[in-house]
Amino acid sequence: MGGTFDPIHHGHLVAASEVASVFDLDEVVFVPTGQPWQKADKDVTAAEHRYLMTVVATASNPSFTVSRVDIERPGPTFTIDTLRDLKVQRPDAQLFFITGADAMSQILTWKNAEELWSLAHFIGVTRPGHELNGGGRDVSLLEVPAMAISSTDCRRRVGEDKPVWYLVPDGVVQYIAKHRLYRRVGDLEAGMA
Ligand code: ATP
Ligand code: MG
View (cartoon, rainbow, N blue to C red):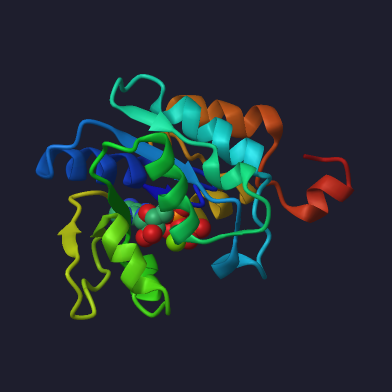
């Protein structure tokens, strides 16, 4: 499951759990992106923080693991590289790539899309209120019975001093507080955060 995970939240975890159940998966590998090319113009939290929050969030589930392939590869993250690297590490595995239906519609437009289909079966998950569209491709689409949680909303809430308890796992709430992530820039400059 690829994502920015800035931060990882219960929407991601419910989606992973649901897909694992429906497709009878042995393992879900969470792959935090390096520098996401789709979000290159926005500020994204340091990869190491996003990776560690993902580890904290998934630690208690024996079939959830976290991969560093995307954060250790220099340059922007492309899903084709993610899949090639995972395939090298797990040559006998049948790979499924889980992503949000929003990211899926971007992937569908890529010019090397054909190789992507040969490496993995694509599963697009969507949160309530987002349209399901497979672009006519052979992808699976699944509406996840999750809450309408987004990382953007979690970051905004932290910046506004609102709680994110129960939107993200407890350990992630504590990690965010410990490292003072998502504080407003003005607060940081004023030494208030
Ligand atoms: P942001 O708000 O920063 O875009 P996000 O909440 O969409 O973050 P990503 O890290 O971009 O989180 O998520 C990875 C994938 O998981 C995305 O493709 C996204 O569509 C999907 N996803 C995110 N939140 C949910 C949710 N609540 N239910 C189902 N899928 C989700
Ligand atoms: Mg998103």
